[in-house]
Image (cartoon, rainbow, N blue to C red; front, side, top):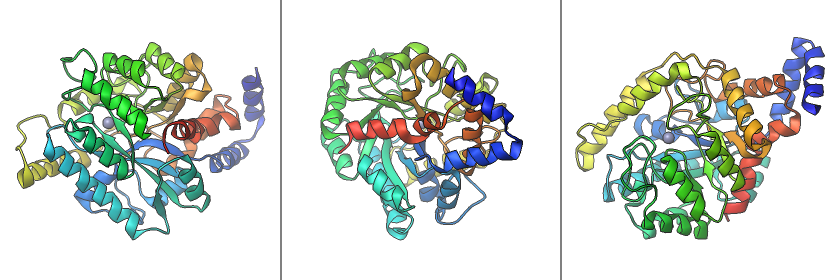
Length: 383
Ligand SMILES: [Zn+2]
């Protein structure tokens, strides 16, 4: 009822006043996004994030413009990096991120917990959370996992596009029936360390296994709703409700196919082209192969059917089935080739706030979706 009243007030406002109100409310959000792939552009292309670019989706000026003050920078290593090579490559992405942090302390700082996020963003700087995208990156070693935590990494996606030795992926043929005994040990160790368990990319059974083991809220850092767009990377209503019961949050992914079913074919092609042909085993030849894959993906700019209104519809779907406390943003910017119309890069995020206001969302609701919900999980899990 209150939402209807809010909507009625909104509709009475002239367009310019609606825009002003959206901008004012957006300026007050914390701006947490649990998945961006921008470090890929740093390592492969050497981009300077302190300058506003016209390529890619994210740099510091555009983060500030979009009011997204606390993104999770994913240290993603493709699954064709195996064993020690995956660890080596993870450290190179961590190093690339360190060079960004060291070069611009006036604009960005590493955040380890909720208090850091609040302190750093209060000074007008970007609070950088770090995540590892794919359980294969620990090379089946809890020691490696613990050292990632020491390096400031505060969340890990249990799998990526292919199964690893202990977790089935949503985009591969199941071989483990979810999580193996070691996989469950990984989840328990993440709980003990204070690392967020991220269930984006995992098979449905892996998701339920992880929820049965974890004693802390989990997140889906970049997944959307399967009820609206039926792709395996999205979550069913039952999964979203289970995640809510666990106290967790789903970050809505803006990628092609995740949002509008008309784009699902593009997603299927992208999944197939993620480079699972014959990759060299190690060293420079492997890195050159990865660089070619990156250039191919970065060179593409898909036209999609999805719009900012569709993203708002996914948020609203989660709110309807699981409540306002369990949804956030996991854009996948710089990891997707076809962002929605109206959300072409991170600077456009105020238009999502406007879309939520058009649905009758109140200021307090918008603040939860654009940071408050994820801040609660970060506070409950990390130290
Ligand atoms: Zn991903």
